[in-house]
Each structure stands twice: as structure tokens, then as C-alpha cells.
Length: 164
Image (cartoon, rainbow, N blue to C red; front, side, top):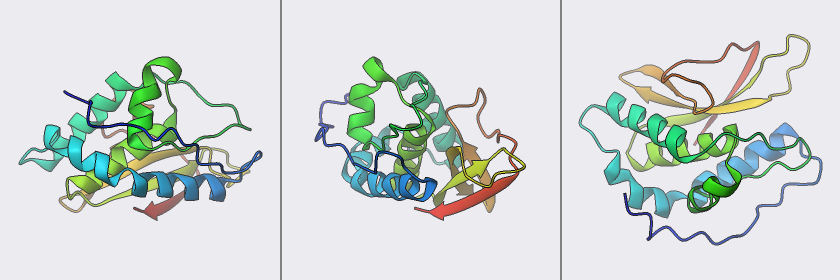
């Protein structure tokens, strides 16, 4: 796959020094929106008559291209698709970056998608994980590059869905 047409602007989307979950979610939605032109360029590589296969290709691509590396709690970034792909070999990415990549590509393929923020802590509703949820044939399909398998969902106690 030729990624030459995807040139990152190398601009940071500054959230704040100590970000809230809402600020991070807003930055992620902005990064997805700003990734639209690049996602349109990449989308043909994932297009399949069977949208489930397209979703699985997105999952496999994210797993292969972005080594997982959790960001520190006080330095959370939301990067556009070109920047994620350009920086992935050197600095990797975390759930936010997988969600941006997956949601951007789903949107470019005409697959309805949302991002799901979850909390796994019974005593705290504050989200600590995010991933893409595609809607295919009326069913939620999980695209979470952090997990080992496609269409598998992490256990959670609280969830918040944001339409992209």
C-alpha cells in the first residue's frame, strides 16, 4: 500500500495539560473530521462488498501498522490519520489512535460508526478506553486494535457512545 499521498501536517491538537475525558473525546472527534481527506485516499484498499470483511481489514491494518504504546495520563494526544501512520513506527499509538484510524476509514467507506468510551471501574464512570463501533447489518461490530481479536469487546461497567 502506497502511503506517499498522506502527508501529516505535524500539528499537535492541544487539549490541556491535564485533560478531562470530555476534552480528549472532543479532540478525537476533531482528529477524525480532519482525517477525512486522507481516509478517502486509503479507503479503496479496504473496500469490499462484504462490509464485515472491510471492518476486519481495518482491524488487521491497525494491528499491523500501529505498535501499541500507552500514553501517559498527562500527555494524551489526538492525531490525524496521516500523522498516526507517519509516527507509528517510532512512537506507536494507543486506543485513541486506533479509534481515530478505524472510525475515519469506516466513515470513508460509508460504514456508519461511532466511538465508544468505556470505564471498567465499577466505582468511577470516567472513561479510560475508547474504540470504534461500526454498524453493519444492524449489528454493532467492534474494531478495537488494543484487543487480540476482531469484533471482541472489552468488559465495561459504563459506556458512552459518540457518533462520528
